[in-house]
Image (tube, rainbow, N blue to C red; front, side):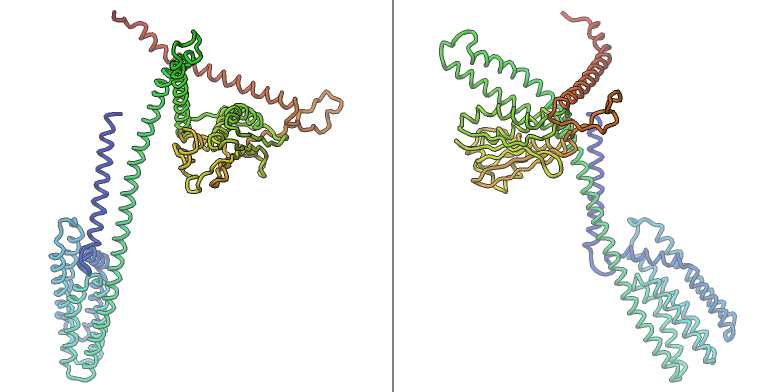
Length: 555
């Protein structure tokens, strides 16, 4: 694994570098000059693709026009003109094909635009040749036919070249000039009007193509902005994936560290607590100096505090890693609350605090982890005693909720918590501003562990508080964890076996016996599973034990 991590980091760095370069390139394209120079390559590429896609449309139109003009024009002139059209069109297609085949980095966009502009000028001059051929006839219908044909060709050429305005002008102006010159040389007002009409139509088409060109520019700008956004999203995703992997590695390292340190710390702590307990209790006789007894009490208290801190950190780490296993059984919430009240009552009496327990007598048992619920109750009562001043009062309520579940709440008359600090105290190691002034020392893990333990039971945990009016902490256990009354099985040998069975009372002795039987079955199955798991582990470790036993020991 240690050899694979560097390659993984190198790969992720290379991916991030490529993403950064692509985003930078897109930003540079957006930050360049305005107008046609901004997306010059894309515009020329669109023109080239349009020409290659419709490579046969204009030549076919030229063939149809040539066949039509054979009525009033010499065939040799028509064939020569048609040859010029094919040659110039072939040059444009060759240039467009080469332009699309070359990679962008090897292209000189200005040079290629100049080449295509020159090719368009020659192509427009080739089309202007039909006006020279039409000047040899005096048929009015032939002149009108040439006018309509020129307008159609100019419109088609403008549509194909609308992405690059210099190509629009260089390809169509020679045709319009040839048509206008042709009509002016006829020296007839009617043809002069047609020449003016040709100029007006050409100017109007240029105006339309300018608007279409602006639309194309806007489309390219939106596409470039979209590319930038996609690049940013990919960059953020790559960074988040990298951060997630680092967080997973850190979390794994934390779990390994806690697993190792729990054993390394608990072993000496047990010795410290045990020997300090012996010294504090003066089991082997009184101390010659009473100060030693006080030191032993301080050592025992500090060691016990450190052990509780380690246990809380380990519980929190197991819950966060989703490795906290619930050992569920039938438990009465009122019994857990009563036990916790007795455990805390001595500390409460020392401070003159009254603990009142308000309960409902008809509560059904719950299918929960007794240790977890007991830990939650003890934490809530312990916090209440900490923060409640002398001669205060703590009220613990247990009852049903509307949805069918059960709740437990602990209310004290302490200083309260500011509303903006409630979210903070529910987080690990979070403590309110008044905790350092009015309460005993703590780690800030109790409420976070309680909240997560209730969440594992699919319950709800809430804390409400108001300054100088105390704090109320409440948790709810859902209905699905309430053990309702079970209907007994009818005895077929009884005289009244066909009568409808009556449900068991949850507070009756029969119900308790049945619950105890179910718990014994579950415990028996759990012991069997642990036995077989331990046996499998021993079978897997047997070869290693043999190797260790067979290895010679060095003296």
